[in-house]
Image (cartoon, rainbow, N blue to C red; front, side, top):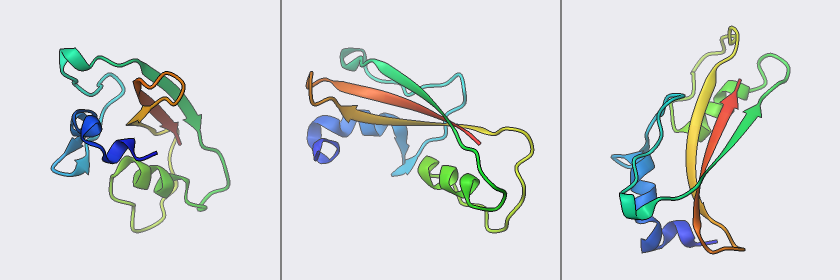
Length: 104
């Protein structure tokens, strides 16, 4: 559980952080890791659906490390936000990079 705080996780976290803030990646971008730290990327598409004004966009913004909109405005169409998160699998003990695509 404390792998993200260990020195072994530093290269993975530094690939997704810039000045201690989460980097924003586009749909075709991904974190650049050194060649000796190649890890599998596991992609999940998470579709957020619900009533208007309940905080779906604010939730995605806070998970992505971007500013939460101060006022409510209705999302037109679909906004896709990509978040990368490193983890270490308990079964194999190898690091994995999760690519979470939030479809809001």
